[in-house]
Image 1 (cartoon, rainbow, N blue to C red):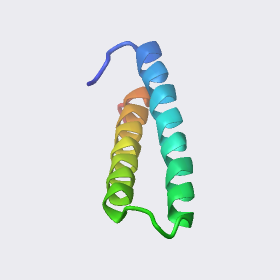
Image 2 (tube, rainbow, N blue to C red):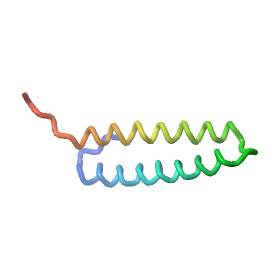
Image 3 (cartoon, one colour):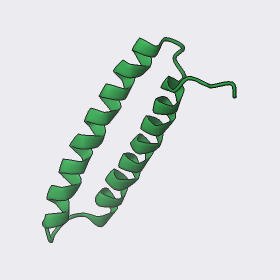
Length: 68
């Protein structure tokens, strides 16, 4: 997804950052639990990394290209 509207990109970034923060909190809680399902934890960490990649990609769309 590559919205051409910078405002839409900024809104999407806010959503993704919020989800990333929420996942971070869930992962921290699960990591403290000795009986945690490792597969679930790995899936959450993978999702968190995917969100970080999406955030980075969208942030780069907001940076204007400079002709040097």
